[in-house]
Length: 111
Length: 112
Image (cartoon, rainbow over the protein chains, first blue to last red):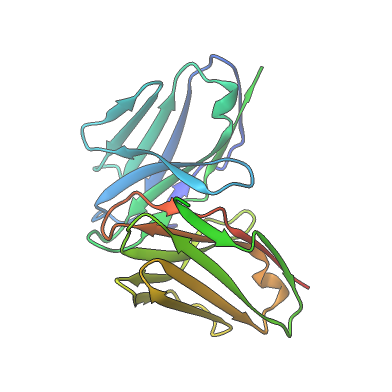
């Protein structure tokens, strides 16, 4: 099983749609979780952290299900500018260990 | 300058060449990383430096040699590379233990 697994997409959605991305991780002892965004030919940037209680930042909602080792990202009212690759990122071993990145899910929002 | 700066942005090198990638961070972070990003693959961790000490070497071939002279600078020395080493090489920095990494723009390397 891959350490961090995501549906690669692409997801092609119209403006205004709601889209959800899922991610699973292999290590049940994983400590912290994040979603990063990577635009075409650019570097990844932190979008949001994922907390056990779930968290929301404007149109973006992140959820964590530790029992199922599953993380999700929901984007409401999609904008053209949301088109990017969304990377699921996990700190597998806690503490100071480096982050492990998923392959990413590509989103294209179409006018 | 702010953030994480990588040079050069693009590099084409022959298999017998020696070159170096440079990374500089102005964020006061104490950990720096080299990642490799190839097409259709996730980011692969290569090296981690924490407080200028290498703490992780992720089974990277010896033709890649990192150097961290101080907490703000990180180099990746390259020699006798193979065509399959062509990729985007990303440098990142963070406060140790924090999940917010700041990435540089990357060096797009082509080995011919």
